[in-house]
Amino acid sequence: MSYVVFFMKTYRWPLYQFVITDGFGRGRTVLFALTRTEKRTDIKQILQSFKNIMGDTSKTITFTVDCAPGQLRALNEEFPRASIILCLFHVCQSFRKKVSSLYGQKLPFSFQTHLSKNGCIEWLIRVVTP
Image (tube, rainbow, N blue to C red; front, side, top):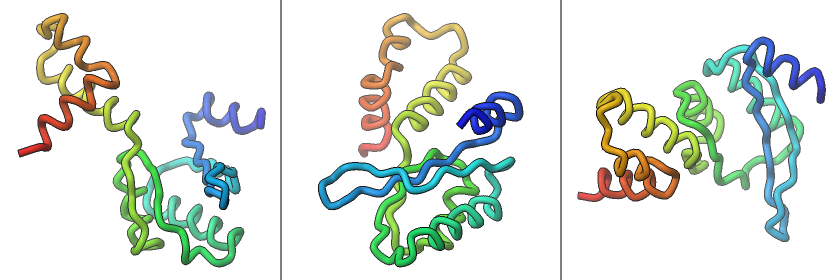
């Protein structure tokens, strides 16, 4: 695992972890993968490796990912029936960055506290709910 940490820190390579849920609801790691880029072609190779390792992947129903466009396109191509859930951490992180960039340092303190994880969820619900 030290090589993985080296490439992640030195070259900023993304690390992918594939976890399956067993019959008892416990997560089991089945694959770690490093890639230089998060382009669709690279992600497709990783997904094909996952399929080769697992054999029958027809029961694969859900993927949780950040919002990288290459990931989303590759998943839609390789697993068209699977549901894609965006990682709450990454959604909130993107939301906070966008709001901060729009308002800069002029944000009221109370608004800053609303940009915590729970506050982010509340704001997202307000934004998406008609």
